[in-house]
Amino acid sequence: MAIDDFAAHTQPQDPVPAAEPSPLPDPRAVVVDPTLTRDEKIEKLRRWSNDAQSMETANAEGMGGAAAPSNLQAVQEALRSLVDVSTVPPPVP
Image (cartoon, rainbow, N blue to C red):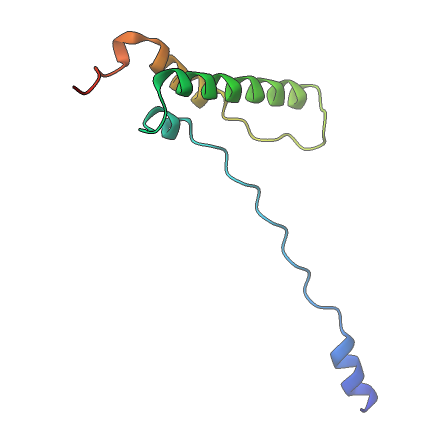
């Protein structure tokens, strides 16, 4: 193998692109999930809300480097839609 051939085979490859961060969960999907009861939906969204609040607190305090995205507002809106009885559709007979 000639030196030029060797150099061509040992050149660094393009770095593997960093994985895209996973998208934030969509709280609206929880609200319309037919496999969950209303109470299960509320519990799941409350957990997500607590997680998002913790993330926003960490971001505000500069913890963990770059600020992570938050979907706190969307989670709280979805939670309110389940807790506010006037916005919950009646059960299907």
